[in-house]
Length: 397
Image (cartoon, rainbow, N blue to C red; front, side, top):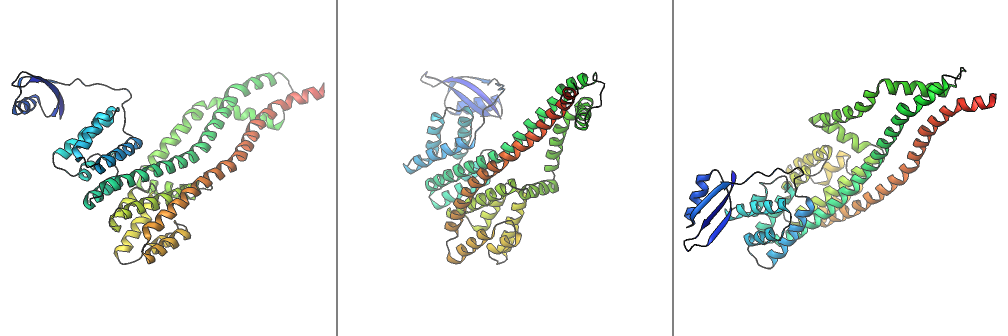
């Protein structure tokens, strides 16, 4: 489809203009004629190349859903809600998305089905909840619940990312500082020591040899980390590599604990939201598995789904996997027995979201002395090894 800009007049002579998204110019002209317009001029819309194109982010979707819920609750028709949202949005990407959805609604498609045509903006969970809200006649309530879920999920994701970024940034900075010292600073001292004519201390010889290796193989120092990251990404794209790396991340000390608690919180929050919306349990587990963010946990959830379809309980397979803590499986079991699974899952999610906060704080507190010690040993060791010959010369004098 191509966008065409058109200008025309009504039979009374009133000027009209607009845009049409059609296959070719002839179809655009025919469409306008059917609308009773005359003096039609149609041309292709120039393609605007954007260096940094706008993107619709989760926050934009969440704000829109709150607005949509309010308008639906006020009794406005769905198409009119989208028209008002288009006029009120200042972000071009959002206006375009809303316009495309409105076109689908005007064509007679339900909202949930229309949203599935835009998988980059609306994930499977969103579409499933919207469809459940449409079927139950409680779309406004479901949209508010979905907004609450998205806001909590974004907050949880931000906490986990901060836990990962902190140690990674420290490692990168340490590597850069060490490389600069080895390539540019240590050779200056080496040239100075070569004129001493005396035997150099062992630590100094080791540091100078390490510096020579950095200078000689500078390309390995520069491109090695890049190649390593590329290799990890390539492995991550393979099913087996993806599984093994996700498993490794869950088993890492300190960081693994944060990721595991975050995964449990995400699982319980998503499952609780779907259950509250009336989505069938097997369909809910499919959606929860897809949005888990870890293929190891996804595999456990899918095995749990298969077990439930054979008449087993939800808690049993989860406990056998060893991935979910015993407290989680016990509370889920109690929720199944008492018929309050949705409420129990919500409580578990609240608890583990707080646990992620605590785990991130503990990790930061634990890593700070470790990082300071590491930097002290590495940087301090380099400085001392370079000054040892100077100290020896001073003693000799």
